[in-house]
Image (cartoon, rainbow, N blue to C red):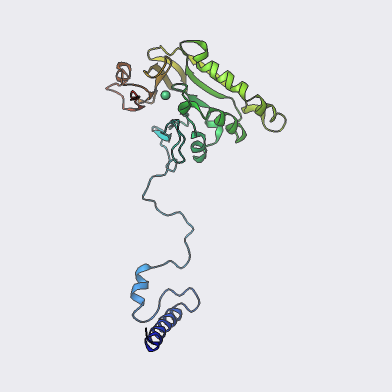
Length: 279
Ligand SMILES: [Zn+2]
């Protein structure tokens, strides 16, 4: 490139910069004169960076009011036992218009997703476990201890199935989880509010057919067997206000699951289906 050509190009660039600065003399002018005004007007940059909430074109959980007769389900986790940064394991938060909230499964990594919803922990004190695989209850300790530290001033109540032996049941699992946390909980005595450091295990017979395992405040939750791994896994249904939610947990399709639907009641069904492994 010749020296003369470089000089011409440098001069053109200098003129362009001067034209731009002329239009933005105090750093806030939004218009400039001349041919460049058309392209800058198209961008229509606001005078200041906006700080108010803007309209969204996507859904963000827990950002809409729940009406008194509505039921809302938030998938806090849908993953597997193998940890993934962006997908916690099974965890479903069901909220009712009367203010009741229920957690179905609390799989590994899901306590973080629950925390992100910024719901006071006193409302997150009821957990229903479909079975005792870690991707369905692996974050129970995090919700138990972390929830108490974050403001839950009442016991954490947990419902879950029996097994074919006492050692395979929910009560055994929770009693021993509590024992495993002895050092943790003892170290918090006298330093933090002790009211949340209690965990209540409500074990029920996994073989029950639509047996009622919870009935309070107009809400009825029933359990029925699921087909998955050993004996013990269950599915749940929740009825309230003429609405019904069915949570399968892990299960093969089965006749009991199909029997939960009714013609007179709008029903949501969620499940993860277990498929046989190829070895
Ligand atoms: Zn499972």
